[in-house]
Length: 120
Image 1 (cartoon, helix red, strand yellow):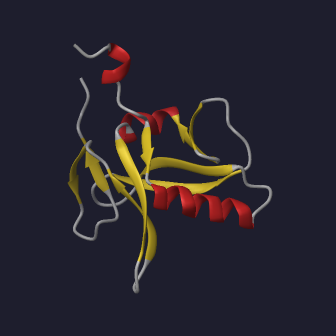
Image 2 (cartoon, one colour):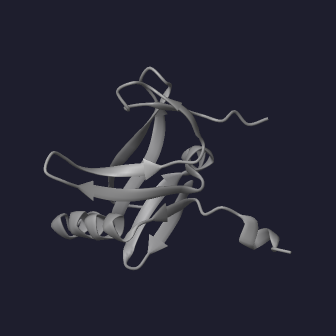
């Protein structure tokens, strides 16, 4: 039987492509120590991802470290993002971070916002 610790979901899984892109971003801005990720109320489905530069760790941040990069997530966002995978896609038409979020129950038609499972 799996232990409680092994059954816990990671707050956020970072792919190698995401780690490499975050590393590039941080190298280009010396004051930046990582990326800050969150969610906010917006769009027709209710929530949208937010990304920003992090110059310090805030008091309530959850810190995710992989290799030599750091991602900071507000504890409120953790409930929405837990178990998600953050990737970076680069093709001829766009370059963007993308999320595979198992908590999503619906998205809007344009793909800009999403809804998540309600917790009891």
